[in-house]
Amino acid sequence: MAEGVEEVAKLADPVGKISERVKRPTGIEVARMRVPLGVIAVIYESRPNVTADAAALCLKSGNAAILRGGSEALQSNRAIAACVSAISGISTNTCASGAERNASAAPSR
Image (tube, rainbow, N blue to C red; front, side, top):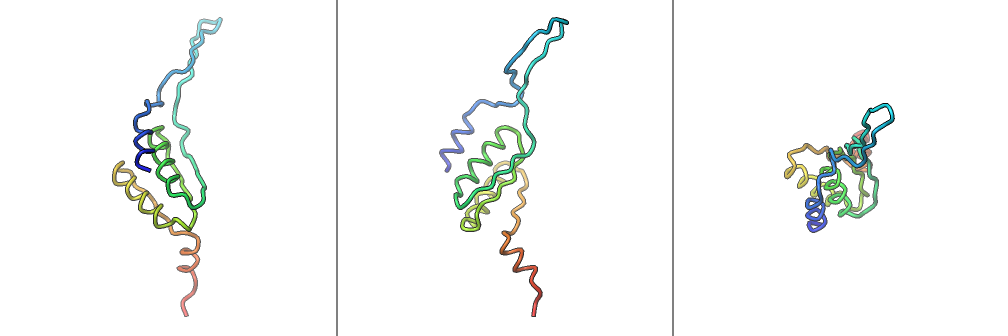
């Protein structure tokens, strides 16, 4: 996982690059600039490496990420999200899984 994140870190910064420039007949110059999409949502099963890879790609490209991993890897995903948060200084919201939410919402007897 760490090697994958290091590879993403080595990539050139995509934000702000001009990929195409055309001069219109009216004299106006039109350019295509790479900008963040905004929010990227990724839903995946029990593959914790996807958490690290998706977070790294979203940070590199300036996008926010909503990551929803499978319950089988919940603790691993939380640990990876905590590492990403600590390194980037960006707050993460590690919501409880559906099963945990349902259990906590159940009336006490």
